[in-house]
Image (tube, rainbow, N blue to C red):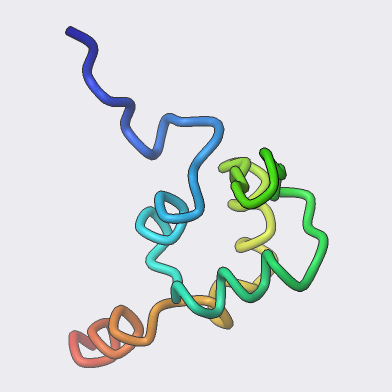
Length: 81
């Protein structure tokens, strides 16, 4: 029986996997990929989209992560400091 792949090792992620892996705000991320054409989004069928993990990492490393991070995660980090 095959083990499910670790999210950090997968090349293509579902939208939900990307949100979970990078602690992103579900609403902000879904709005972003719906409204803007981005290099890390691969359309599949009419509604489905896959996320290229390495491309998303590059996008987030340019400072975009602060705009997309889940508020619960951001507040938790602030409280730990």
